[in-house]
Image 1 (cartoon, helix red, strand yellow):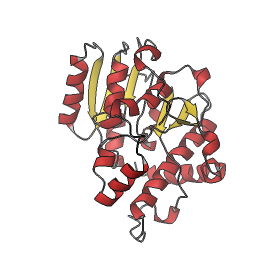
Image 2 (cartoon, one colour):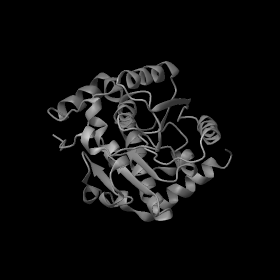
Image 3 (tube, one colour):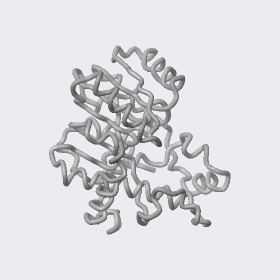
Length: 266
């Protein structure tokens, strides 16, 4: 069982005057993070996602909790870079400065907006197949979806590492939330879902618990978190567990450059 010796009610500091942006904030861990953070006097929380009705439900939960934090929904489909660009432009038009970003699912296309802190949920993976990144990689007949997922998680680790190298004044961390009972698990195919449940008996977290590690990373004092490192729940450095691929600075730089090229048309 992950170390959950963490109480967000007492350990999240006062967030007065802070502006927070949460991607994927309409469901799952993003929604729970918004709820946790709204209890600590944040001036304004922006949540993005694809579904306005889901956003309305999150905002209603926050209102019912008694929080007076201003909540704004910005529609964004992270699978569409055109949508990400539009979200960036909308956000910039509404605020002059993001004082306290707390991202659940970090998207590279938003990188130039944020000037304080970035977090991304991550786990270890094998490698990145650059010549197939713009394809569905359907030649992976055995465990293909998991291999693709693994590449995305490795990319999260590498981006956090490269962000720390390029922008040392910004705290960038890879955050493992634990195995959480959200739609990401529940919507898997039967065999995949069964595998997850069998291998995580006694370890499955509730969504509100799964958000602990990322709200810790977003709000803890800078002296408590290492730039570019990897953390397991809650606030436990696990960088030593990563394989050499996840610590490969040349791979991180190559991924960054590949991404820059992919974003040129936007």
